[in-house]
Image (cartoon, rainbow, N blue to C red; front, side, top):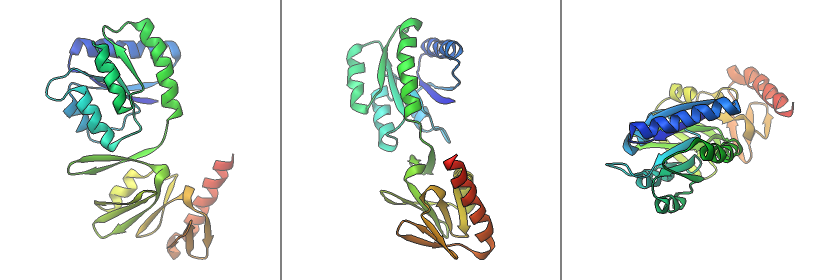
Length: 236
């Protein structure tokens, strides 16, 4: 299922786009979850919202679509972005923000459907699992494939990624609620490991490449069983 955001201040234009998406989904047997935002600020401040595809109106009051896209790209380079505008020039400018395509108003279903076929294929190719890390100024979207392990240091949460450490504040329960349980395992009270990154296990030591972490005695059996299940399913 694709998670889709419509960022459009005009109610009628938003309805037209929503209707086109629903008609396309019915004809192509696609499954969409659609959420509409009436301005860029509301879209950027949406809590727990991670979208695969965003239709962004360019001309909006308070914060226009280009500025919204700029702020989006500061924390999320992966979401497929499509600009919707009355002026072709604005659409061309949108490619500066790695837009996948543009749609010129008024929207006609026939041309929309052709574009949507290409856009949907791109979304499917780019599908990646993410977690959303929130902080006081906003959020950051982190691909799980780039995350090696998570370390708890009191009220500090350290995300060890391919690009270095990311430090946030919270607790273990928040981490457990964020990470997919079939891909991460809490090997002791202080570490959650990405099962995909496990390269070895020797006694009570788990290896993530050059990194060595301890597995607690109480969690060892469950960890071994979880690893076996993970890699068996991966090979299937």
